[in-house]
Length: 498
Image (cartoon, rainbow, N blue to C red; front, top):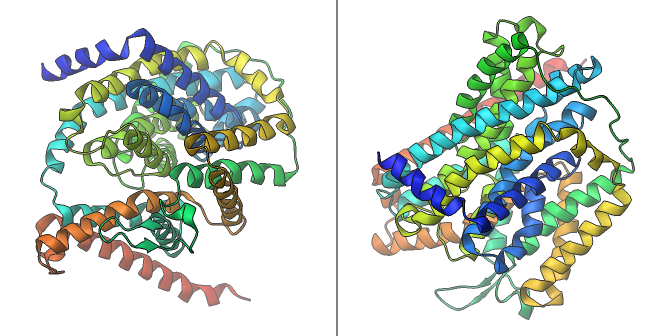
């Protein structure tokens, strides 16, 4: 009954005209972001983050969340029609594009849309049920436990994002160091400012996000030098009853897988889509068709993709730890509005928490309308020339950065991080661990200092507490496994040389 009461309370806030409007805007923008090759929710949220200063707290968070899970709906369209994936729609290229080659584009798009709706619905139920419980468990965490949890998040996310623990940890360390730039809160000393006065307040979060993700991604696409041709295929949406019966089991399996992986540090849509595809390839009655245009190959990954996007909010709102770069930006949006995600969020801001949960289901309904019957109209977005689109985005990047402090130095910093982010891409390094380190680095320092003050400088207290000791042991297992894998591959290397 408490769950029903809380959901009813959430719908009272989510169904106001103002919040409905912001939810619709987020879903529309997110769908557009998913449709456009080369863009994604990370760069879009970083672009729109400055606008949240002038929007009410509930509306801004609902809008940014709609952009994130709305992009998960739309990103499969370009993958299915043109084999141009985002990170969370790579698997959709396998069977989805094969269906397009066979003239079943409409069926593939309908499958992705309805499966995303199923995955989102299951994940919302998980979010509403588990988030309060995890919040109560998180109250048991002390400063040492939070330090260990953040370190575990660094290790897990770095490994998953880049595929190399060394590269991931290096990028995370760079982010932590960037987060320490500015004035030390305790001593008042200036750190890493290079004697530049405008760095006394630190590097702006918006500048790092816009530069490393927004501008760098645009420059990368322009550097490719190619223009994508619009999709001109025919669209026939509705499946037959036998085809519909194949969609449902696969979507339900993907929903469960995505909901679980979305809870884990380093999980999320990218891993969930591969896991759902692997399960379908093993247990589906039509596994012999996988890779050659099977409906299950589209349904399972779409449901897992959407479910993981929703449940990734649970670690953020219940524990206060963002598990990926998008959630790090969402955490920044919460902090900008004076809301600290964590164990006390549900108690201190119940209207925001339950309003956001309820708005996700409202957004789910909006997205079904946007991505199923209107999908043929969304495909016209591909006709926008990149030569017009990208300069416009760069212009708004500069305007958004400048508008925060009315300081031209912020624009220069953003441009600098745009160049740095582009160089990271050319070197094969991803900026997501850097962003996480930048967000969590100052928090890690704060909890580390707090624990040392409590224990009077005893470092052993990090290992003697049950929670922090267990998490540190898990970190050691992660690192030892990576070292073992590296050594084993190094021994096999000379055998492959002829």
